[in-house]
Amino acid sequence: MNFKKIVDHCVKHRFLSPSFNQLSFLGDALQQRIEQEWYTSNVIQNTNCLFINNSSITQVNVELVQLLMNARTLMGSDNSISLASSTSVRKPTKPTKDLTTVSDLIEALPKTQLNLCILTPPARVIDEFIHLQKIRRRWWKSYLQQPVLLNATSVAVNDKNDPFLEQKIEFGSSVLGSQPLEVLKLYKPDIFDHWQLSDDMKKSLLVKFQRKSSWPSLITSQVELELAVFFFLTDAFFIRNKASVLSLHKSLAPYAVGVVVEGSPSRVVELEDLRRLMSLEFKQAKIPVLPLSAPWTIAQCDARGLNYLIFLSDSTLEQGICGLRSRDTSLQEQVHVSDVVERLKKFLVK
Image 1 (tube, helix red, strand yellow):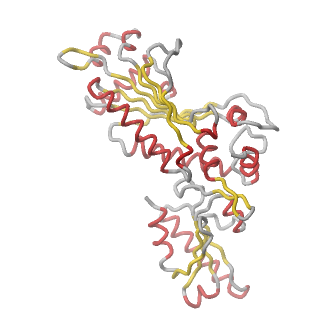
Image 2 (tube, helix red, strand yellow):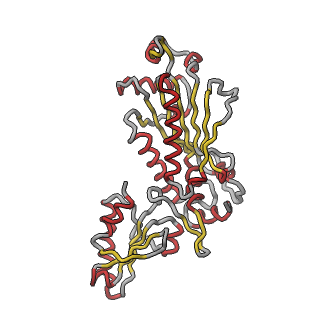
Image 3 (cartoon, helix red, strand yellow):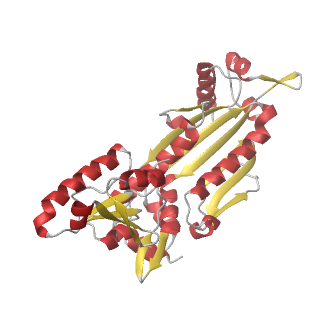
């Protein structure tokens, strides 16, 4: 990995600000895509998970237990219950002119964390923790061009500041050094003995296990979102024909499709009308399309991760045929203009 080339590319193409203390326009859009995919996986697709706007979920304490108990009461479930949240901390930073490592970059950027806390019965804790590891590994790899970049490591637990920690798994990558993308933690059940819980809370928490009352188990997950943005950019970065290109996953690319007019001056008005109509159809299909006002060249579209480009020409008006170019192959095929939106929906919409 050439760290400097990747950072220079991200600054040039508006993923990072020149001062490195914030993400730029496309970096913000990429961060929102990643957060939405995380939300879909952990909240929308999990019937026992609630998303809450509360920073207390970032710390394992009595308040977190109370939130979990309220959620369990609300949802009326004795099975595993999850809480999810997103928290952001804008660290006091100053513009940085020289970066040499990923740690320097993450230190300069704001800090956003995606948090997941799971309260699970003791009979299910091992299966739950193993299942979480599998789905999180699968989630990360599903968006990567180079899945081998991701690794999961079981970390030895000897933290005096966290004496109730039983297991710890870190997802990271050699390209990120020692910075973990996500950390999974499993806590010992006797952590609940350590806290000053009310009698009502203790009674609500205790569950029957092997003919006696036992504490449930607590599992947490925390994702460093700005680090995830840089990781996906690093994974997607490559050189093609001496030009730097981003091959972002279709679900993460800030814009998936661009529509380009290449017709003769006498027919530009008609082609622009068709371009506006097609852009509207893509928006209605919930496919992020490049704004009509963005004057991006083909090289810029490739450098910024657009998946597909559609070319409208005089023959589009005469024969209904447009050009459809894939970023990954750089090949262009001929497709009827009435079919192109439905065709791309099959590739780009889940």
